[in-house]
Amino acid sequence: MARASGAKNSGGAKTGRAVWGRAMVIAVAAGVVAGFGAIYGIPGLSGNDAPPACKASAAISRSLAPLATGTMAGLITSGAPVDVSGLAFRTPDGSETTLGRQLAGTPGRIALVNLWATWCAPCRKEMPALDRLQQAMGGPRFEVMAINVDTAGDGRAGRFLGEQNIAALKLYTDPLMATFNDLKTKGRAVGLPTTLLVDQAGCSLGLLHGPAEWDSADARALIGKALAVTAPAVN
Image (cartoon, rainbow, N blue to C red; front, top):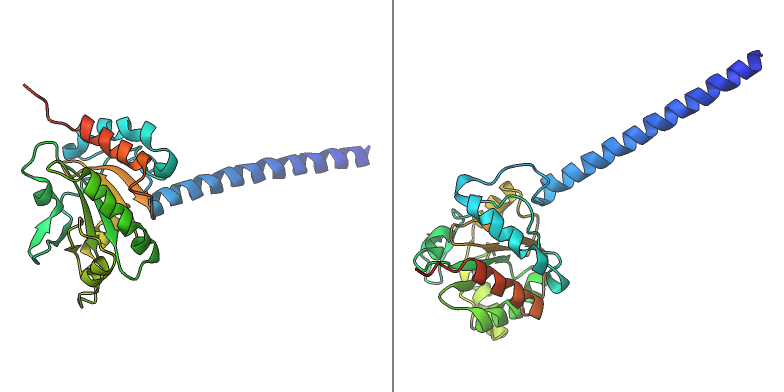
């Protein structure tokens, strides 16, 4: 009888350890998911609400989700948009500006903001595609704003664009990497390239970490949808 009782206790202990093990796995998994949300800035995992300026942008972002497929499958459109209108950089003539200022003036204006550097191989590879997207869809309401974050300040970014015959993109620069650091603080950048689709309010509609085929049919369809849903109302 003593043996039977001992066997029962042993079985109960094993069951208890199994339950405890499963609980620990769940807890660790939850921690990993939360960690990815914090590190990669994945919208919808942080639980933060959109700032007041971006409340209307949330519905626009959700409307783009069905088109985040194919070559655009990496585009994150869920969760609360982030206000990035204060991103500071320099225009081609060296003047200081912000994203909010660049987006002002034309109703319904949107931008594809891409952070890149000449030392970043994936950035260099996708730059021609971004140039072709600007050639095909650039206009009063849409611009590919490729912001170079090289800190050397020796003109290598301009030389690279010239060597690659990239003529449609303007050379926006940020030699202090303030744009990258600002997006990193907001949980929206972990490396280069980082690309955001932004509406006129300066709110993020989509985020993509890493390179993409920006001149693909999928990309053009997504940009076209964004232009359609942000078009100013006609009275």
